[in-house]
Length: 144
Image (cartoon, rainbow, N blue to C red; front, side, top):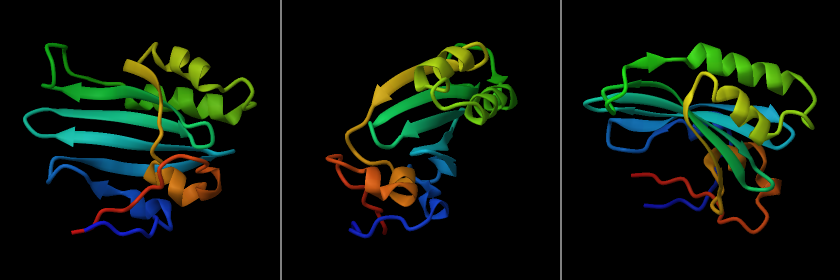
């Protein structure tokens, strides 16, 4: 069943998205139309990616901070180092903390850094910045 009501809080965005082995958690409002959350997976291997979304323009930065048994790469966990970079950049002037610059900085410690665009509103944007939806597809919380 799909509910047309959008998430009212960032806490409501925390959910399991793939049976019991994948989901989204740790949603945070970074201010000025930007949000962040962790995408996780845990079945026969694990990973943690962080996504920083700029809700208005529909741009996102995704980067992998931890992984084990997901590929031929050696296991790694660079969560603290990557989040320290994000915190430092977000504490400065937003004009300098662009997603592109943040991606370049976080690539020094994280893996699989990607800049993408989105046309469908993420839950965190719906919760924190619904007025920035524009012409993006409105987020709909799926319930059982």
